[in-house]
Image 1: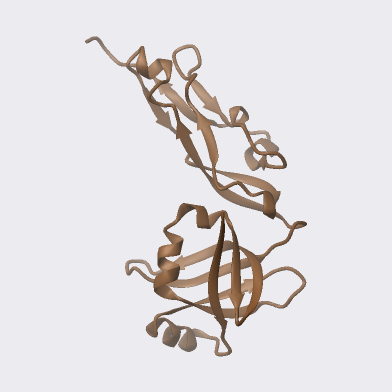
Image 2 (image 1 turned 180 degrees about the vertical axis):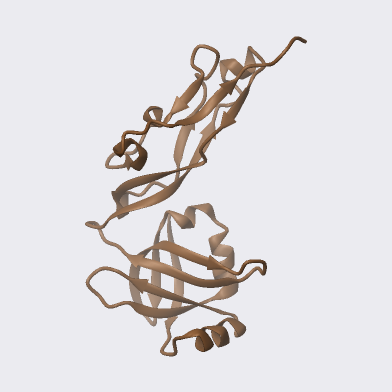
Length: 193
């Protein structure tokens, strides 16, 4: 999924300028990376707030149009106010086909209700990880990684990182370091009826 958002270049920088920008309903940000110089930009706060609510936006290629010029970027960082519903700053990194990135990708679990351990034995599934760090080309970044729990039960008590089916060109950062962590485990029913 590709997102397209509008931005305007901003000349004024610093704490006071950023505060005035936020008070006028805008969000300060920056676009950096690639062979171009970093560009200070501003976004409409409300539209950016609701765009950030979409889980796919955090791992998608984003087309930012800055004063008529398009940039292909990835979301790298968002700073929120500690208790107000307010975005303080947002960072984007320029990417192309040759850019390799490491990014957190959410896990989507399926078939937990039909797993033999749950359906036949009355146990439960315990979720240990809800996201993983992947390394790949920016243009091959998956929106999410699906975890199939249909085989989890007493004989197969857990799903590990090595059990995940990854798209071509995507590798898990934990497996690169040699750690095969559990993603989800089967918890047997305790006691009698």
